[in-house]
Image 1 (spheres, rainbow, N blue to C red):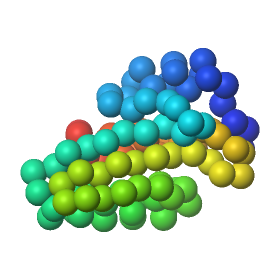
Image 2: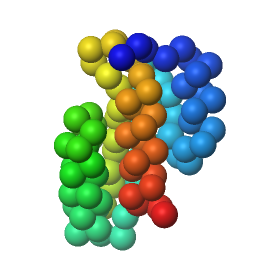
Image 3: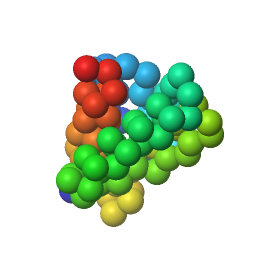
Length: 94
């Protein structure tokens, strides 16, 4: 998969609330009510990540979930990352 250009990434992020591009990845932080809600969201994301064969780098501390997406084989952000971010948005906010 081909690495996207900075302007392509920024254009795609206009459709994703709370995501930003830096350090060759797209990032978001989501705050939940409590740990149980955060863990539940991570579980839903994990099933989709398996289905898409594209797995996030993430960190969870209590009710906060930090997600970083990049395609390591391509050395940056690809369409797979945009698709995964879109899936995460749909799962959590639709």
